[in-house]
Image 1 (cartoon, rainbow, N blue to C red):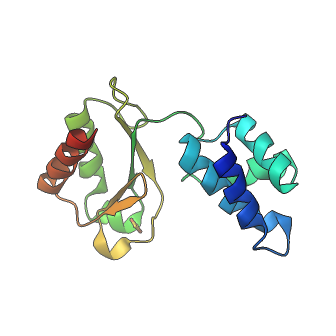
Image 2: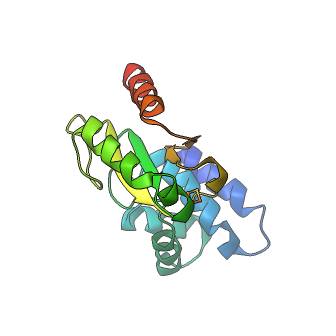
Length: 158
Ligand code: FES
């Protein structure tokens, strides 16, 4: 089993909140992602056993949402929005800056396993572009100085 008993219980609690089992798919995926750090076929199968929805339907939902990584990622998953508002406000420069500071390319993980850098679609914070999400937190109105401070803070917490 990949899911801990605590995660299984959380998923069962979510399931109890909905009149239809399928409604618990996204909450269950979220619980699993927060525990495991990424999703894969084994996780889908275990969720299927808990909520009684076919594994294929769970996998379909998971693959639709880019916020669920499908392979192991670094301790800090940096998701830079590159949709229209963020692009207009310098998302490309932000990505290039992060690539330079981290010594990796978009899609890669630093050799120490600390950071994974990816680009994602709109995160719903267009008014604070350019922005990025790191794990579950938003970082907005980004500048190179802010990025430096954020990376330094995360490295100090690692
Ligand atoms: S375009 Fe970046 S948050 Fe919406």
